Image 1 (cartoon, rainbow, N blue to C red):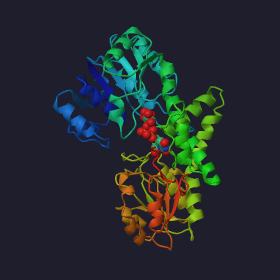
Image 2: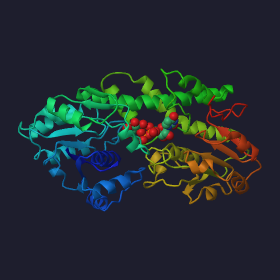
Image 3: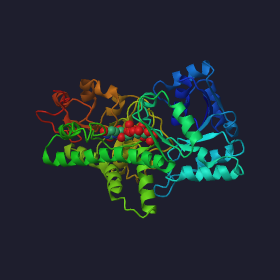
Length: 452
Ligand code: UGA
């Protein structure tokens, strides 16, 4: 099929390159001319495993190209995907859909009665209907409103291509035959259920999915706090409940909290939409509050273990999870913000993170004399530090030279706070560290991988 993809960020590029590799002819569009030029030269502005190679291979095969002429996206296309960003607007959770509106504005003159427009961006419930009406009106009734579909993405950063090619399900919010036929054909290769529904339900499914994932994480973080108070191993509790098929083992890892460009934003958006609809989203609000306070709880564990404070602290990890350079709403940055606000001197290291301007101030903390800086190696970060907090579980941290870390750190018994339960407690204790974890009690069973 001939597919146009508007928006060449994580979602648009992954979708476009993956669809091209399945034999479709794909043209990617973006208003950012510089980005378009670099993509046509095979250069990506961010890291996503396997994506740069796939983009280059599909471009070389003549199935993928990029253009800044967004208004031409519908020309000759069977499907026009809209994959632009929908960030959180300034005020409390409301999603900003101006980029979607801009894309619609740009294509309004070139859509035909045979064009199918597919919203892949995460959009507030009702946006698909709104866009359908707008396109129909702007085209003087030529474009049928039923030709707008909603097809939410469930791609995790770091494993986006795997998620695209092996989805658990594909959700298609369709109102008319043409949109349904084209999308069912496009996804004909999928070995998972196609969930056919209306546009609004498809939009709600996306928000509910991310809110549920966020709920699982905040739930286990709450349990981890309780387990810490009671001296119980939260990782064993997670395993014990996760083996119940009704609960499932995924997203039950306690940590510093969830971050990224999706879970926090989509949770806030759902809270906003629920309030606007007069429903009281008390559970969702609690999920957000637990996540907001999780880095502070981790800091309180660190402070309990430290002999002297404030003292220099090292933080390992800045990205919101491993295998991505993305630091948007990263819990590691929230943690650094809180440390700086409490007067700590922080040296942070991450192998890949891309930082925006003034990333820590962007988290809204008031500095009280503390400072932070980014350094070029994990060992530079720990030099002279009294405590080390692992905030992102990059594999290189697991394989660190702990004798070297111990020699570089200051104090009698330096503290290691394993904010992702990624390290071996017994080995660290053996090296002379005070080991602190998120709900993993250093006892007989602590750290056991749990296979038996
Ligand atoms: C998330 C969803 O998982 C995708 O399905 C969805 O398509 C995507 O948002 C989106 O809406 O675009 P992503 O933001 O890449 O994907 O990140 P996740 O893998 O979901 O992780 C989110 C955060 O939760 C990370 O900070 C991670 O460290 C944290 N996490 C995850 C935990 O703290 N504990 C867990 O058990 C799992």
